[in-house]
Length: 496
Ligand code: G3P
Image (cartoon, rainbow, N blue to C red; front, side, top):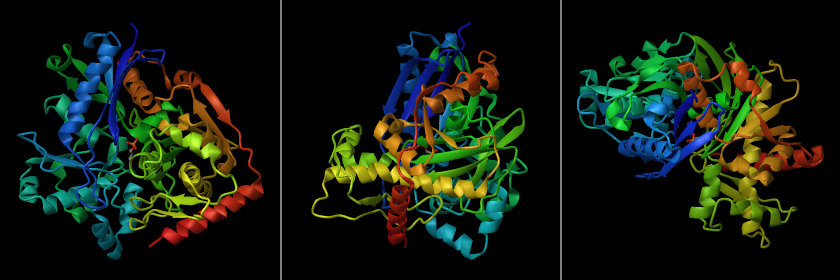
């Protein structure tokens, strides 16, 4: 028994599949990017068939690259971009519309209307979320209201809703399983995180028929079986979690007070609050970190919509770098005295501002500003946005076992030492980068491996989390304060 697990990480810009062994080592990887569709300003869509096709192809690639056959694999884990919303026909399996991506802002008017009716409080109390277009609920409502015939079909019980995990499981199992896990459910604006059930009052407010909703399971559970036809051997799906929750698990943040921050397309910091459902007074989200054996562990989350995407914009939009990794070299050469601030509000601002109408801006330009200073401001914006989240979190939560915060990080941008050092400096806290950078996939692999009985317990998994490098803060408090003042001033100027 070598405890091989296949983990699928269906992200915003690419799908990755990874085979891990029981030493948590990567044995084979498959990766494919897919097209982003921007039909109108502020709208972001994915073709559901692309999500399915890349999942299938990357699984085959990962198996091939690991020199394994499907019968060697003990279980499959699925982790995914959260909130992205799909609706499809139960009988034909055809989506009635493209997947509406979490970044999509088309429902900002609907959210504003609901707020004007004084309804934000009830959504917050029951779901831990805010009325922002980010979450799935208003996206489902938009599909039902705007796709011809969708509402009638939904009311007749002919349509199904799912986040990406649900869609993939439904496809993998040939339409036999319509399920999700508690973490993905907790991002829909429809799930009561206190009672652990879909909430009828919220469904009525958004006019969403209950029959469309998937069954909600623990993160380590039986989600269905992939039939033999697909990979040559039947494979059970045993672990599911939204990608940020999977990264929390993969970074072994199992104790109350532990924090992880993932730097992918966006940046998402999650603080484990244990069994305590902490309500934020500072516009953070309360969400489910994981649910195991029916027991829910909660988290406070700060969500930033644009982190790595800023670097992508430097590459593809401004075209001032050829590769994302060139940004660090430019930043190192920038004039350290320059005071250029970039507020990357390309799709509005997430936590703690929640301003869907804010738009990006660069401040402090002089004739001496070059691409070096712009690159530096882009990388620094990630650090500044993280400070906003952590300050909100410190105001909300004092508990936990950590006297002094250490932040565990992961995601593509953490490969940049310069960015991580700036992060530690501007946070005034230690930043730990783990050995295994595939934290998200590893997290869901552990959920599946544990269910399969071939991977170790939580305690042993935590003990085997290893540090690659610790970044210690070294900036003076005076400089830190001064820089943060400049950042806050810049953010205020972008607000609508
Ligand atoms: O909430 C959105 C988040 O799950 C997206 O993550 O890694 O695809 O940017 P990522």
